[in-house]
Amino acid sequence: MKIYIATDHAGFELKEKLVPFLKSLGHDVVDNGAFTLDDNDDYPDFIAEAAKEVSLADSSEVRGIVIGGSGQGEAIVANKFPNIRAVVFNGQFEPKDGSEVPDMIFLTRSHNDSNVLSLGARFISEEIAKRAVREWLDTPFSGDERHARRIEKIKIIEKSILSV
Image (tube, rainbow, N blue to C red; front, top):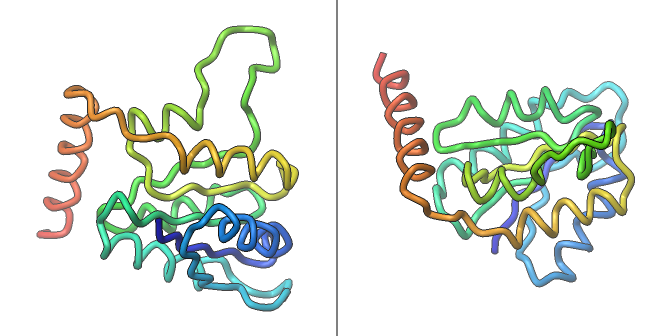
């Protein structure tokens, strides 16, 4: 799988760990920056490049991983592009209050066919990030009719906005 990865200063150290990890899993990784640690850089500059590539590819064999402090702004930027379904993960595999909740990473792939994973580097460790990335990459889209129907509706919305 081809993976575009990008970050700003807040996720720079985590990106530097994830690139070799992804390559060790056999993925073709394209690093869209940041290439140096610069506390004054702006995440849209890097995230947009990765999201654009995933958007243009519009293929299940191409995905993006974007990283920031919380991952929220990065997902907002990525979701500005057509064909992008970016989701944020900042650490919750299990509920904190003991209640039953479904596995967030699994659902973002199996139900939403997410193609960009936005990680909140200030909320997760390297180990948690690797666990989330591996699960996200390994989980297929279910293809269930109801989920496919919903994704098609999202695509219709995108097309209607682009034609305005």
